[in-house]
Length: 448
Image (cartoon, rainbow, N blue to C red):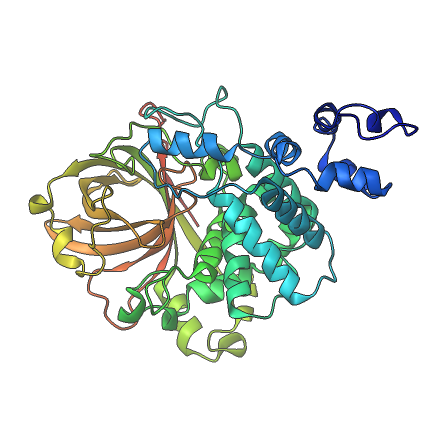
């Protein structure tokens, strides 16, 4: 039925047709139209079938039902919810408005950060097959394109937040988004990251941040991920990679939000290898000279101890090493890594049981070591890695990390390395592990 007569044409045609016309508009334009008159408002907000809201949502974001089906087909964790198209769309657009306002109140900033963090988890896998990788033919996630645009255009990742929860949300987003924003050439974000480089180094190399209570990794005491720690690990490594010689400029983990999507890393995914462990990997590790590490933590140099000014000395050097890993799945009974895990770490979350792996690690000098470890699905839905490096049958180095993004993300795993003994004052440093194609060139290096 027509809405009325004697009014503009859109009000003289059936409601269904009017909504179809509005569905071709951007939601901001539809919102502006709804404020033109009471009839316009009724046309947009009164119908109960949510057809218009559904069309507006899927024009900007990944279709939730298609995402759910794709994740089920790929064997990924899912959560079934009733879709409220209007609420889903308006909450995201409200968050976008808040992000554009540098003077938004703290509660609103926290609300927006929560919406953005949720959107990260609701992106579609690059394909619906178990043999997927991030390649040119895989259509990008519309949800992540939207999020990336907002992160590049706003300062919400830099603006101060006051609560602990908001700080953790902001750090979570910065850990994942900063890499892609820096890579895009966003000047103010790059300047912000460089400004924080010494602060990030201070956090990463502060020995007080490691102990049995956080399993010598980027965790809080309750076992949840410490995203502030992860963010600082990411920032230290990325800033170091920017200084590598041109020869290795392109040898870096895949950056950009599309690289956080599930199963975007190369390889085959199955119930026996749900995390895509098997295959060839690259690993960057960064480290300080131990004399510098000790001086930073315990001396009075540069307003110390543990003052960021320590890293402003032009004589300071931090080494970066590129290594090659080759990993394969092994039975639990064959794994020495199992003996180094606690019962809490190895809790099985069916259908994602802990995966035990073994393999080799090779550096630029050609010396090979054995790698053994495990991957587990945490209660938080994140993939957690732990492994040790073994020389001459003796475990020497221990590494603990978090998969950045979803299961099998191309962006890989960021974490902390230290010794297996975990003695007081043992060295620590950040690492970044990511999966590569089998024919990836073996051009390894060490740079100081």
